[in-house]
Image 1 (cartoon, rainbow, N blue to C red):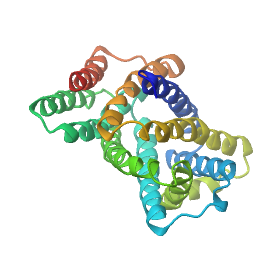
Image 2: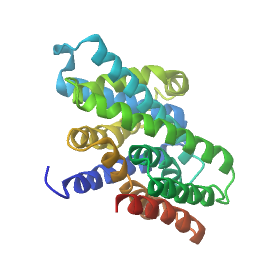
Image 3: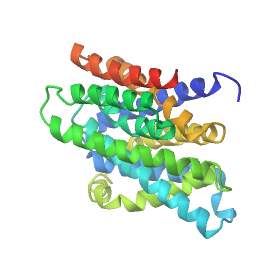
Image 4: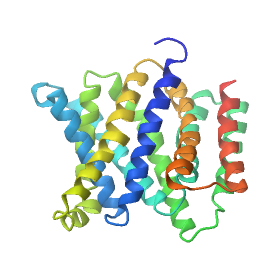
Amino acid sequence: MNRGAPELLFMCGAVSQYLGAVVAVGLFEELSPGATGWLRVLGAAAIIVVLRRTWRRRFDRSTLFDAAKFGVALAAMNLAFYLAIDELPLGNAVAIEFLGPLAVAAFGTRTLRSGGTLILAVMGVVILAGVEAEGTVRGVSFALLAAVFWAMYIVLGQRVARSPAAIDGLGLGMLAGAIAISPFGVPDVTAALGTPWLLALGLATGLLSNVIPYGIDQLVMQQVDQRRFALLQALLPVTATLIGLIFLVQVPSLRDLTGITLVIVSITLSRS
């Protein structure tokens, strides 16, 4: 992979991921965040398993267990993120949950600089946590929970990406994840079975927000180390803010921009 290629791939994946989030936000009036998240994970798993014909492949028990752990972390991250953006603007939620990859990057260096960048990022999150909106506490809490699962996604995902399973592991993992979060989504999905277009849009979020960006992640994880991968995630808060502005008319306040900027600056410093 040549220089600059990871950044380009991430931009493509990020745009797809947050366009999927725009679709999801539009569905929240008809489907709960839990139902939308479940459809997203299940739809993505089905697409990958069918296209790859994963059932024709054989993997050892250890590989399958790693894929399952990865998939549960991924599904939990998706669910927590949807619960967060049901309460917060898209860019704010992504900036807060970015503490997860930042912690992975900081742990990978363990230097005074990495500690300083982590503090800077925390300051940005504290600023973002003060957004004026009903349900802010819930939204921030869910975004922080998503951050924990995002860190797990990075650590476990690299193991799967470099295993014999790779992309197949992503599909099998998401299938396990869909089963794990089914109590949060299945009850509401059954109520929407009579509205096919809702189910179709819910499944479409799986293609936009999981298959494309996470498939790209698997390719990049094969080429870069854990810390570099975590740092590349700095492109996501910016992308999410722009997508939220353009498609959801979520205009960030000066306070929001300050918090998001602190998170991004912290990553820039940690890369220098």
